[in-house]
Image (cartoon, rainbow, N blue to C red; front, side, top):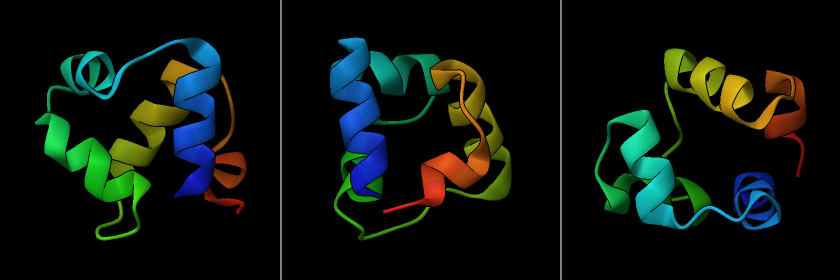
Length: 61
């Protein structure tokens, strides 16, 4: 999810800070950003809320 990486950087979050907000391990954020894993639907909603965007926007390349 390249979009996740870009949004995180634009908002000034580290992977650790975003992980803490999401209550997941930092490695999970790294896996999402690198396309190793994809967030579950409930996590996508949480990310959209944090970044003030739609889930569709998150899923765009």
